[in-house]
Amino acid sequence: MTTLARGLVVREPGDVTLEEITIADPAAGEVLIRVEATGICHTDVAWAAGALYSEFPVTLGHETSGTVVSVGSAVTRIAEGDRVVVALTHHCGHCLHCESGHPMLCAARTVAHPRLTWGGAALAQGFGVSGFASHVLVGESSCVPVPDSVPLEVAALVGCAIATGVGAVLNVAQVTPGARVLVIGAGGIGLSVVMGATVSGAEQIVVIEPSDVRRAHARRLGATDTLAAPCDELADLAGDGFDYVFESAGLVSTMEQAIALARRGGTVTLLGAPPPDQEFRVPALDFVASQKRLLGCITGDVSPVVDFDRYFRLYSRGLLPLDALITSSITLDRAAEMLIAGAPPGEIRVVVRP
Image (cartoon, rainbow, N blue to C red; front, side, top):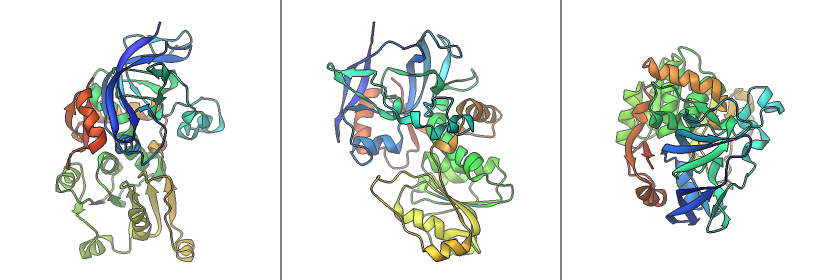
């Protein structure tokens, strides 16, 4: 038997409707989950607008948590009734990248597994999850148990925004105590960088963000200084440049700016997701002579079973106030219009509760 679910179908860019979709039964290594919460990420909005990928029709949503309904015959680590968060690794577990602790680089992560249909035709599973629905079907390797002490709406955000931002600090850049940190962009990912830098013991955390509301959030989460835009004050704060710069706005202009604002020998980590055809430029000789490090970051290079458990423990001790990212909660039918228009100004993470 298959599962009939309710889900948001993006028929084509800008056309989103709530439909009945069909989910295949779990194969041997798969897990069927009843969705409890899914955060709306900027990449969902960009895909729905046709600015990121061109695969349609698709059901999006990837910051997802819920309760396990059923499991395939080969599943051993997850059981019916478990509270889980979906990780974006979708990894094979035995390739070079998986075995060296970098499952986000696994080639199997983006291989499509046609498991959803709508009106008898194939429906793309956005980011391998399709969390804007009442149910999702994913592999066992993508499921991480959630402790009873962690609300499922908080756990959902660990799947992307928190994994990306905190992971960028701890796993990718490896920020050291006493460091001077600059964060460009204070959405869900940028604010997660602020939390990660605070936990890492950074001495100075400067945030550039045009939104008054988001700058206020950044200060509450540990930012020492916030600016609406680069200005003379930034030069005073930067000195000879920052030890670590994180770019989460996803703009070519701010990526180039991030590289320029790092000190000689500093580290720049790019987390934003610009359209796939865009490129940024750096002065070649100056970059070589500066010995700066330029790092890409995909979902914080997390190993979910290890890293998510660490984030949950830090949250339970009050050291990672992850729930501060949640600014509102809506139903699936309201999420359709938000996927088209984007979240209202000042929102950090809107959580969809089917």
